[in-house]
Length: 427
Image (cartoon, rainbow, N blue to C red; front, side, top):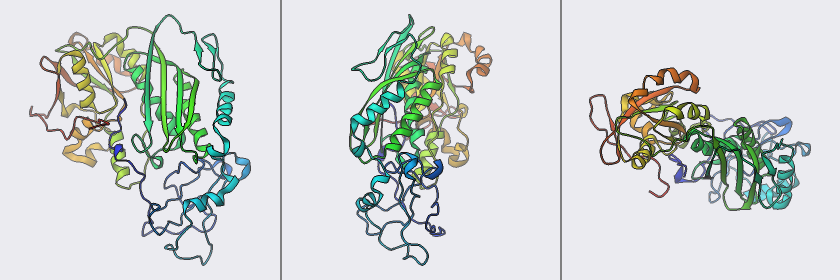
């Protein structure tokens, strides 16, 4: 299962007016603070709608920021007009509660409870029916099951779930970016085995009051990411729930040798693609109340295919480098020594965290890079492979004989204490 870095403490960030903030005039865009899942993702003229930042429902006062209303011709429309105008009441005046806001929006926002399960699914099926099927998709969306005719290559199957307030928060990622994230989180597993995706299923649990436009944007983001990776979305499911949850199932193929996490041997060098710590640092900043967005997970399909012929073992870094190297060690029956000075830290990690940067980056998670165990006789190939991967490739340690486990050492060889190994849903 995918990790969530530090997202599992739940709850959306509370709003509040900054001392230097100017109250927007009537009809003025209040700013890009965050996006609400119950408001549509687009406003007039295709502009992004902005979130109404309010205090929690049990508080007496609400923030006066508001989002511009969308014209009826813009599809899934809606927004909240700023109460008052010139000479309006003070910022501490109590605003309508959410139920009253919903009533004011009326027909301007189409919500799932208004559209219904089957009407939305019918449109979902209709939209997907336009994609080019070819000989491999025998029966697409709309029947009891999709029917595909894969080639002669080995099939890879994986599934993942993203849950609101566990793996993401609505104000930290746009609907389209959330769709892309859902796909890329899942496809990372296929990349770690040297394969790629061919077909995808998307199951969504959504609150009835979720704006239809929000769900549409999420699916568009997912389809765009899938299409760019050579995969077709062939079906899914929609159900009601208290929070937004997204489950993805992927079927893929491996064009050549399949690599597992169980083939590592003592003496193998450990390499990692790209950088680590960037997603964890973004979460840290967001939780501190700073503006920003969760970065899109990297796409390492090409790197996985290029590395597979030379690898003894591979695994993707979802729950943290230490945690996932530990999984590889347990599957392979070896131990690992990581070098803190060699970790490819994401931009800003060292400046923001100082000496704590290596231990933070090694345990933060959500990096979705690849760790590869390569035999010593092939280490000379690493430099030649890097230009073909589409990302950097850094040597970060080695596998050694011993009970499965991971040690992170500093430049002097001292074992560094870790705050945790990585993310664990139930720890």
